[in-house]
Length: 173
Image (cartoon, rainbow, N blue to C red):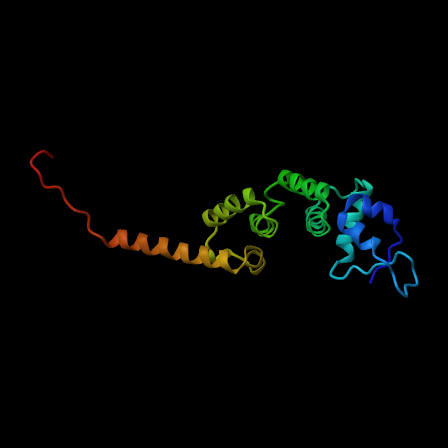
């Protein structure tokens, strides 16, 4: 566990969740404003604090922006959420992979990311090239849709290849 010494005013200025959390009465607390943030990875919380303090060191890294997106959604920090969405849109496709874009789009209801990411994944990849990480990012339902759709397309191609075309034997040819 990581211990931070932060001013409550700093956190409450950005988040209604922190405002509510820090306004609760404390019984038998050694530190007057101590709170335990279960379920937070300390690196992600560091990224959020860096964003809130206005640090410029890591602003373009995908991990940094993803952390801000996740924790801003969790702590209801609207400015952080929209900052991360805007900056992630600006990342190059080679950096911000369609599978991660699909996962984040589904997870945070960023609907304009879902369909384009899914289409890119359908077009350019044979099923055998989808890695375990990409399948995890997609989620099982989307992975199943891709697999079954590609299998149906393959069946249609085979059916077309073995179907004899009808010949037009009119005298007008």
